[in-house]
Length: 228
Image 1 (tube, rainbow, N blue to C red):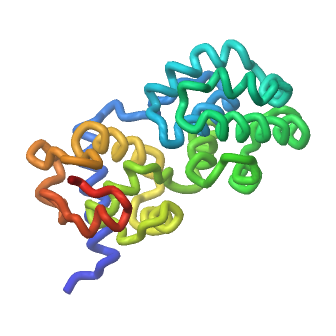
Image 2: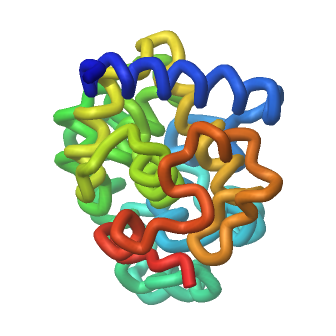
């Protein structure tokens, strides 16, 4: 009987290798030009497509250019500017409150530590990891969004359900040099092939290595994402 950790490490290596061939240009799809814009975009992307976020932030980033602009904006005005985004009222509140802290405690600059970022309203470990990786070039972990959560379970890389626990498993088996790209690869594959419902297993470059190929209701029901 093989060592489960070694088996998962081998599986993770194969996943990275094959998906890098399949998606050679895989990268973050949110559009931003500075750290603050990145932070705002990632907060807005929760339970919303990156495409929708990019559409809305094009105008938003012209209207609000600094953390002080967001901090001083009336809540109703900011919410109206975000009205096509899912949960826009809550997100407007998070953004405004986060920017108040950034202005008052960080001289208007987006902080560069996990602890300081996750102290901001609306910022969990996933959002903080994205900002650290793409805003500060600091890699402390693996970003676990819904695609990474779903595919990691389907591919047998983890049995955990919560993002934080999944991340702990992944950093043990994915080489650190691949931590950033791993997320982008799984997101691209999740969008193109391994969707939440009706995944296209016949077109999947990982089908022969996937323990959930053709569907595994126990895997998906545990994460709240049934395939059918």
